[in-house]
Length: 159
Image (cartoon, rainbow, N blue to C red; front, side):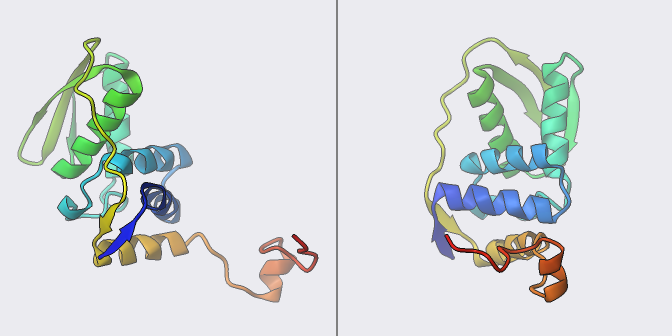
């Protein structure tokens, strides 16, 4: 396990999601939800099991009055996104856990329970290696061809 700052965790999730071909807005939501994510409770990759897209989509549809919506993913991801949405919107999400995930029912204007970001914490080594592997897919090889195409700082980097 390696201890990372909250910013390092968010950045790693954002880059991994981009490497996993997740659209940018969903990557940003995942990075924000990572502040509330119990890293030790994750058993599946939220990027590869589509939770990074399915959770915010379901919550947005419920917010727009098109609920209830069911999502299939693990509890840690659900709780992180609920905390994120309740904190951002200052509304309470009514949802029910089920065997495979949760059903989001509706948002209420009642103030939610305060959710504190988890801050600096340890990330399991396997999770970190997996996320770094996905994040690495956003990089290009260091070759003359890639530099000619605009990659890297170029030959006039003088900062």
